[in-house]
Image 1 (cartoon, one colour):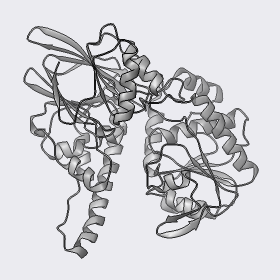
Image 2 (cartoon, rainbow, N blue to C red; image 1 turned 135 degrees about the horizontal axis):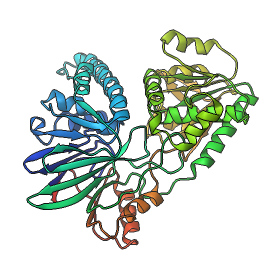
Image 3 (spheres, rainbow, N blue to C red; image 1 turned 90 degrees about the vertical axis):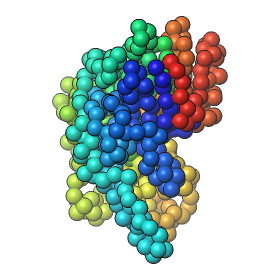
Image 4 (cartoon, one colour; image 1 turned 135 degrees about the vertical axis):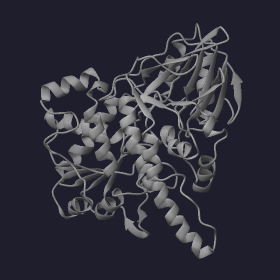
Length: 464
């Protein structure tokens, strides 16, 4: 049995782990690496193995850095089954299609610039049609249902609590009379987040492949973040302004909608109109409503008491058309607008920011980590002037930043996750993390008497 680290090794994104057993090849995730444009294109374009010789794929969840390169894998000859939870199948289908449209649009834009420089044209990594072909290979599986994607391999999906449908992947591997228990954590969620069930701790594991994104710091209690968000909403309502929130379409948008529904239903804040203005977020929210089996007990109880769905309430409008989106700029009354992209780099959020950023009544709320050089980062850094569509705008709207809403486990939960199997696990491999967080987590685990913890290099492999 051999485990090959072909993605998210000594970096955060591009999840891709290849398991060789009994002459078969089983791929765990196939995500996009995200970084500087040219480096990302080069990394994502070519695989370090032959896609035609991969027998099956098991997907942990639908975030783009875990599923986003599947259409390219299919384009290059993979035709085996893709196993995922039923909610992940639905989410990944729309995520891949959206990514395909972006790949085509980006290639068209780059080629226009390249033609002026007489450079050769580039092709998109894949197209929307490739994404649709990939979606045909998916097979939905229930949590805790056992299935066999390859000879000598049985698999179960275990609740990861990260996004809708997210799962840890528990594998039993048997080769030449030897049996081992292997676990891939996927992305580990957090306890006591709204909507989703808590992540399930592993048990009976010999080898653990584990994320380490926030291995260097614990998170604040999410309830404190919710209280801070509630005060931001109150403040904006009281002065008659608009609350503009850049938010990722899958996960964060639905969490914010749930918070707003709860505070309106409880009478904590005067209700105002809420608009979700992102086509992908609208489609994702429809999928959330389709899978109540993924909700936690708190959410199910809230739905029962409030007598309306957690993601669909009286004051909420999902904006579908461009004309509907534009009409929001003509309305002067207080409202909440949640729109993508989460780092305010593309999409409809740019139009809402442009139209509202110079009004001191308004509030811009940053609710997630912002990458350097993005518009979202400049707003979070309280720059006095920013450029939108190439034009300068003075930031007169108030900017609020709220930490503690991350969907990833912090250091304390990561330690608890690994330590739950410390008496049995033989080796732990830390992936999905930069060096500093991974090394901090490794040091914490050594304090739990866990010494066989490794930080594998990209494209390295190990016998298990």
